[in-house]
Length: 296
Picture 1 (tube, rainbow, N blue to C red):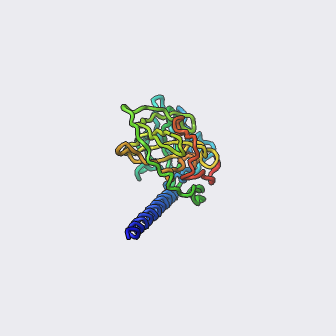
Picture 2: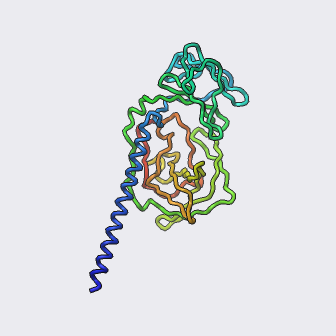
Picture 3: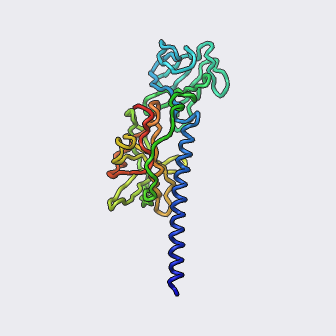
């Protein structure tokens, strides 16, 4: 008579396994829905409408074709930018430009702060648009954003691989003491320094693989990787993946949450490429596929 209780236990275990798999699939579907919703926001990656380099010296700024920096919107003459030998950028508004910072009109020359050392760049608002400067290694660039951009209006989603629970991998974590410092090469061939706190080691189909993350300010691990789908089914420069900090010598790599970098969605964004250590010799058939809505 022991057969019946054993059978019941087996059936219950199988049922729990099915529910767990269903719950996992639903969690990934929700994660993907949240991702798409975020990309559709007026201040998402698709709001980028213009970009370029700020050259040393004085540059005129505006939508008229005769300006040094031609913007895709706003007044014909917005003002001038001055980039000095120290790397400081100042803005002098043109008469009637109605440029604003934090809601207040800009009436005299002001310094525009960039994103160096994790700072928030000064946002210069012009009508519905906004403009700011960024630093990429030794290069100073500019960005122009439009919440009603054509790219945002045209966005209809991103193709993905089918959700596969086997791509949620519990990897061994090997910490570095002290953390290693590496230089990440961007898609415009500038270099960005980053701290690598250790490496995640895992097996797939009987082979051993390693990935090294960048340590984020909030403690999360940020993986920049390529694999044998890159350049074919997925974006060639890299895909991104976040993971929580290691716990008890383990780190969870959920490749179903691997996503496209912003530079794959907009030509006006600069991203790091995968370091040599993170170029996996296997096909990661999970996560987002290449976005076909933007020509690069």
